[in-house]
Image (cartoon, rainbow, N blue to C red):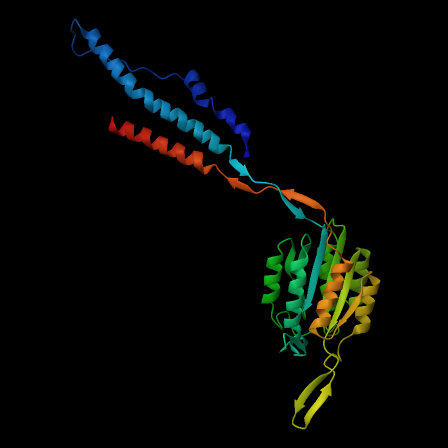
Length: 325
């Protein structure tokens, strides 16, 4: 159906008639240079000729004015209503970019990758499934910063997550600052559910606020935090003396991550490989299901340029006629 965004502008249609009535055109005084007995015959012929020449430009001008007024009302074509599922949940994802995330103890499709690559691969699929949630992205290392504010545009969040790089925020780990930034961005949002998913492979070694203090602030704001500790338990390292097993996750502070999650009503998960990490996000989908509150929107297509183009063409014809005369 056709919809007019500003229909009140139709009141401008009689404006030319109003101007004509309030300010009538002045008739030029013409004196005959030659007086002849049959001068009235010349006057009749001239009047008929001028009248014929003036009628069709006036008609074109009237049609052009009508089209201009129609264009100014901003006509639009409304399409069929499209259903959208909106959950009202605000979900923030905090990803560790510290130097330890470069450890290559994960496999994706039988290819060894670093921890950050695995986190991007799994988190990207999780974000893509969260239809109806507003999602934001926090990247943290020595400092924490907001990469993406809360948005329904999941594709942009995935793109910016994939563009993140190791060491971009520094080599250390500021878990407390990341939580504090999430509290700042989520705490005052009028949402039914506020969730932070925090992924790290280490312990808090930087920042201005301790993780547990930040968790208290989050709990006060009813912000639920799910923490994920990533990294394998053992890894084969080749050296000059041969192969040996090491624990690449020795620096992971699981006790603190457990306390952060429990104090906010969330849960702590341990991801030792890509499969476990993907299962964790599947479980998060179950714990924080996507609600099916239905909302509808109708796509709009602008139509104003059609009457506007037609009006400009008619005005051009009138101008050409004036020049010809």
